[in-house]
Image (cartoon, rainbow, N blue to C red):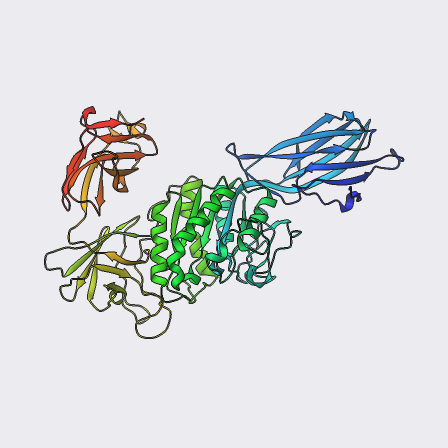
Length: 605
């Protein structure tokens, strides 16, 4: 069935076949009307995801069912300036003429307008217009209320920050209306309804869009499918109906598919967990695996998942275990970036004020830039993450905590009537620590008396020690005031980590004339058993100095033995140490130099 509508009421759908009737200028074509059926056509404000050439193809395709026209042509405008005109001849077969016209648009701060015309002799008739089209990067957001929170102060809007569809009422809990699939400018001020409304992306996501636009000149689209108070179980996909419009996952997937962006979503931002602080934390890891697999299936271009670790908040008695589970999840997947919400300012017990979300966006922006854009601002961009805990002496009156990612900048002063020493627990018991000393990547805890504890926990489940208020600090932070990740029941060793001083020069960065690396390179080192099947025993990343070619790798869980040292990097072939392996003594310092002789290495191609 064809629906014939006048051109001034024409609704152009990018993924649906539809028809329109165009009435030509009666002075020149008084007896001719044109019926056009589109299989592909852009819409006003449509966002196109960029490809590897930083562009996207915009297509008008369909069929003209009215004879009498000799050609069809397309005009392309960039920022209101005509830049391209394309025309094709119409060839009729059985009363219809198929057509397809396309033009690439570039990922930049430019808006494009397309005008489609029919032509008969010297007379041209406008039959379709698509205005304000842009090209850039697309992301999706999911989780609980912190993923989608609005604020009246978040009034920023910009034509290069786009979204698609609606977050439904009841905090995006109501079923989705399949007709609510228009393009629009991103909002986060809650003007329609808190935590929902057309084109709501949430405060911090809109701030992230603004930062990408201003720093890299790339338009973005964010589609936010968060649902307030939702558990991870509520966010799982209905496999029998993947776009179930009553489900959280299905509503988001439906919107993304209708937008045409499902294959080029670059990242998922997952901020959820506050509602899984009860016994359901025990299933969280398995449920996340299910969710992860669903994302990978439905969003085939997905390159990164940003996982937000929750903080002491409006949660349940097992929130510490839940936060540790989130920390462990990030260790299992190479494409997960862990974000620490702990320690972020302007916290209100469950949500944040506008400036709190503003700061979180700034925190996310740096690792996002490292993955998708070009940035040199990478110092301390990630939260400190515990790698090892150990007694420093035989008396066991001092415990050292070794951190990865970044270093703790200072031992925090007492704040809000609370002391940091009371919120690091030995075997889940407070009151054993007298203070802390910072030494580069290590925090040394001075104990009141010798201890036999075997587990270490950082931060309370929810509450302060003295009353039932939600814990709001102090916190361990790095130089950028990014909070250290919370950890629970981390094992305390009786021996210090094993340090491997590794000397290696990556050929791609080596400057022969200056005998130095052009940059300080980050390499990943893996220790493998020296016998088949050469199982991995530990791995970590460290920076290789550009002058000495040496980096210190500190392995936390390596017993004495003989291992292959495997080096991997962004600009080098995977390389193994000499045949037979290298002897390493637990708790000691070992050195290995790949540069002295070719016999010191085996290249794996």
